[in-house]
Image (tube, rainbow, N blue to C red; front, side, top):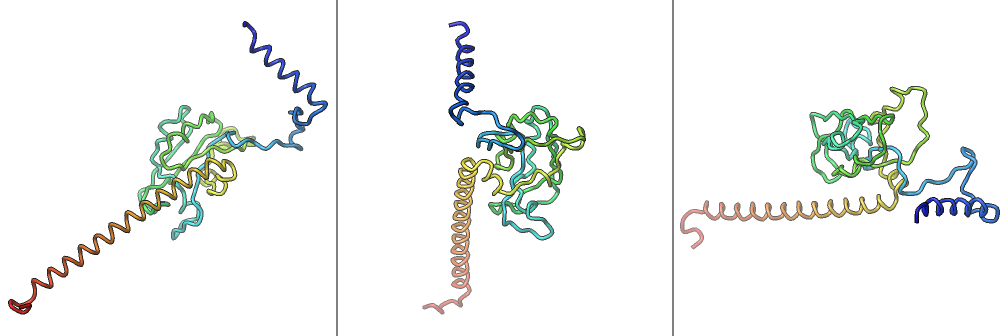
Length: 215
């Protein structure tokens, strides 16, 4: 029926209006900023970078050592408004899995341009960029005040769990599973290499014996 959606919307508004006199659940308006409504888990505003806590590296701060970003620049290329700026390092550092990876020497996001589409999150292969729910970002500097460098974008994994607990738990469980698998694979390879070296040493020792010594 034509206009059915409009009628449903008006009916919902009426239920909330009249229901607010008898039920707090229908009282959808709060006196902000004195009163605040906790954001739902799926809410999003702007991106931030995740770093793994507890990782140490000489000459680096904790967030630098644990930063998941490998400066692959996929998010920079895929960003529709082109608000991400990345410069890759010349050297590498160990990541959560023990692999040597590049890291960003410069990573900036212009929040004034970002449209919160979450495409950067979708394309990131390292689970290093996620969406925040902080929205109180007013500044009197419209050009530089909303261009955040990596130091301000970096947030610990515990912050990610606080903002998106369900998603963070799933991501970390998968990362731990992958790390365990890689460690088991590396251990098996090391044991195989050690056994091969021992066998080679044994053969070499046998070959070095004088003729007839083993008879």
